[in-house]
Image (cartoon, rainbow, N blue to C red; front, side):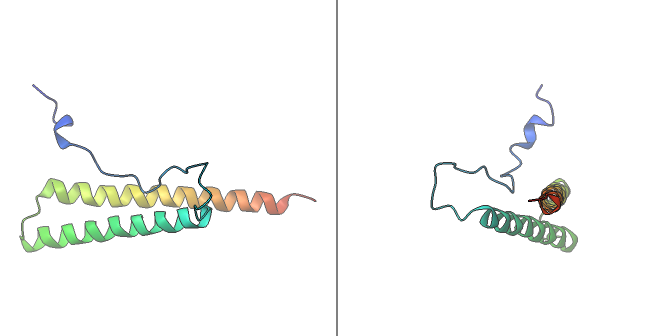
Length: 98
């Protein structure tokens, strides 16, 4: 008998994608953060729509609604941790003596 967890399927893409080190056309770190912010926003919008559909009775299952809200929450937590690390690194660089 398969476990219930394996029947859930893939959770979807992560909000941050790895860099291609050989690519010169990449927009840099700023574009990566912008893309991550957009993906987190999209996950939040999807979660909001899922909750609205569930509350109005338009067809979303409870487990799909919970998964969408958890995905949005985890995406936001990840983005906040990355932001905190970037701010910490910036502050450390600013404290360096030249």
